Image: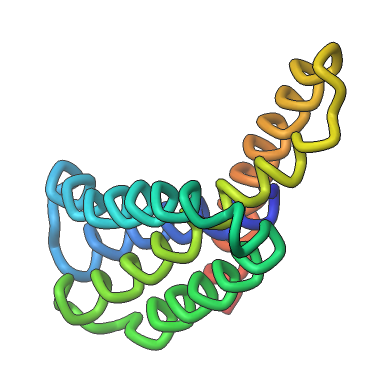
Length: 148
């Protein structure tokens, strides 16, 4: 979970800087341009919550990883272009479509065998993983981009 969150938050952070520095978007406009990503995550998570019983968590995680990876690669390949619609939006939509099912499946897998009396602790550990992943993702991806 930390790895997924790290990639997503790191990509959002770097993409927001890209939108402002390269495409010339204001901070407010750049924020608005992430709404389709949020919508894609929400839609994909809703669909995943309805099909996880039939497909299983493993299938959703694997499929989500493949889709998210395609989105991140698309963002990386299109870096340098100045069009939000052509260079950023498609990658963001793919990232969202991949992350939504993974968040649902990972949460279900992580919590499914936890006894009720330990569910608060397990949920807290999972959320701590999110936060640590976000911090490491921003730091790691930023260091990678700056050094290259």
